Length: 453
Ligand SMILES: Cc1ncc(COP(=O)(O)O)c(C=O)c1O
Image (cartoon, rainbow, N blue to C red):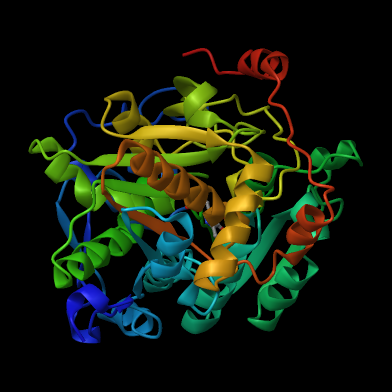
């Protein structure tokens, strides 16, 4: 079969990258240093050691361009990597666009999303250090599922605080986390292992990632054998996810193609970083390539937020980081893409966006689900609502190119499948989904909570 006819572009297992790519080696401006939440002085490794593994702390500040993937992690990656790159032929036909559209499908991982790419190395580096238990937060449940499985594979315990609204909407996520051996509670929780209930004062709160992060860190701080693990935002997570874009580059080379546009949805920024960062050096070298992060209009961190120092959690326990933020007290509405309900953004994505190397767009919920439905009916895969944000923008770009009479190569990351998101699809199909308006008033109120630096 000629390359022009290929639909699935499969990279052989022995071509799976053995190094992660670290954008910190190539950025024109590195992010401002993170600050200690108490002293507000630049963070030292000692500040982070109570909750993070030493190797992960080293990766946070590393400027090595390539970081070797431990063989133990490579071995587990090979259960699902390299992930396939698809040419979206049926979608192209339906849109009648001259563009070539490709998507990297991370939903083939056993947990259904890209999150395992970072869960495995995070658990591995903690295990090497003798840590026995990890705590974390989860929004949609994808990260919690990934950490649960990774902990089981390396013999650690997992304790997961799941944002309450998602816990209610997606009960089967909890089932999977428990099947893999993790423990999962709704956050804010009224009864946690350490007996805290401070955050649960408002019984009607939908919860937020920021609250769940606070709970998970508080828990980790109370036990010597326990560390905390974050599924996005931090530099080491973006490093681990770089395997997505590196593979995609190799796969496009197999069909002699190269993207004009690379698209990823943006929650904390890790899957967007994963698909986009390996293309940044080309952009810096003058190549005409657009890298677009897509966020929900109800939680528009990059497009409406401010570039400022802020916490990642509500209680002010996390390091203060310079990032785009809506303020750590911003409680995003209960939109159906739970994994994108985060007030902040990866400092690496933020800095590159600030420097004009990345673009961002915000899309509305109904338009996003409409795109998901077109995709399901053409490409046959039910996408995660988060990933559907990337699909929306890929479709919009393909239609725009058609109007302009130009052909472009569009690559997007399909970060996960939506088999456990059927509650949200039902709401969409029954016409009950609302386009929640973003409130400038709430934003201004929340920005008052930014720490004074
Ligand atoms: C399928 C999927 N895609 C994307 C995201 C957003 O996270 P990030 O921006 O870190 O990739 C999530 C988060 O839960 C997710 O589950």
